[in-house]
Image 1 (tube, one colour):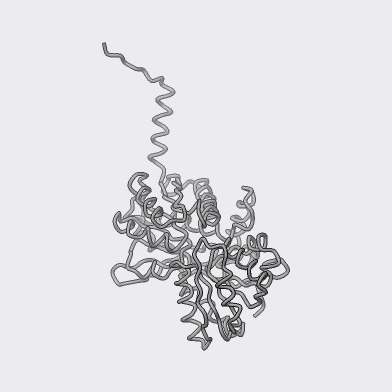
Image 2 (tube, one colour):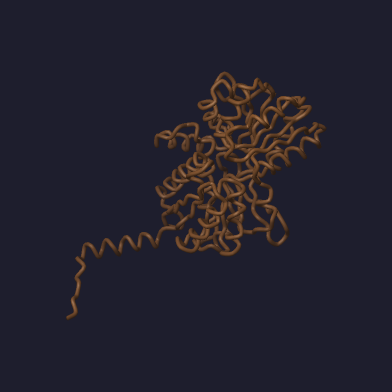
Length: 383
């Protein structure tokens, strides 16, 4: 005997409407570290991305459709980041991605972008290899280390740098920063001394710091994530290591460093690509005020804005690419990225070609600022 099942009309209508809503949404894959050493930064980026998606959806979405963020945790691990990218593209059917915070994570993802011909907006990673290796599916809004070093170059003489040592995380990000800043400094007549490295999970850096203390360099440039910087500053204070400290990386969350390192962070300088402490000095004061206001309204700590703004601008850049491309398929979005042109929170977002001819990546050029922790506050130093 065959049994028939009747679905109530209201239930059927709900199921159908939910399916239509899902089909109508434009899905964006977000590949970020939500656990592991970079979890705090990745979470900030995701929360910034959600603010952008909500803002865009409240205004009607893109091409008449809502944006839907599909967020996955790459666990601060390159192998996991590549697997996440493949899942987002093949299983979740996202025609565009944003990620993957760290340079090693992004570099691991890039072959998947080429395999599946899907573009990714790179919001944070700074390794030069990301936009010079010939991957036409990469569009980056964060500065590579070479661009950051170029922006810092005019400050070198004003700061009176004579000899600089480096301490960098032992991955593509850290090694690349030391190489690019070292090259720039040598070109400015500055002596480059020690180049020390540390694992991304290291907690005891006393061996490296002892060498740096014994050096005759006047400045140490450091590339590391915020939690490791906190440990470094505390260990420097314990060792009595008193030299000029400048961190690289574009956004090192000075407020979080102040909260975690206290007096040990006093006097340190940081290169950043966003000035949330001084909204009127940013390229788009109205957008900055809206973003910071929304961030606070959601109960997030202010310290996170120097990371989260990149997720916010990243989703806005993707939305602009979808609109410019005229459709929400992977090929149209990739094409649309080349026509993106709007004022982000840290400068004009437009993509110039970078890398080998015929397979260029897109690179935007954000503003870069130097800030200092002075009296427990973040200030723009007078040079």
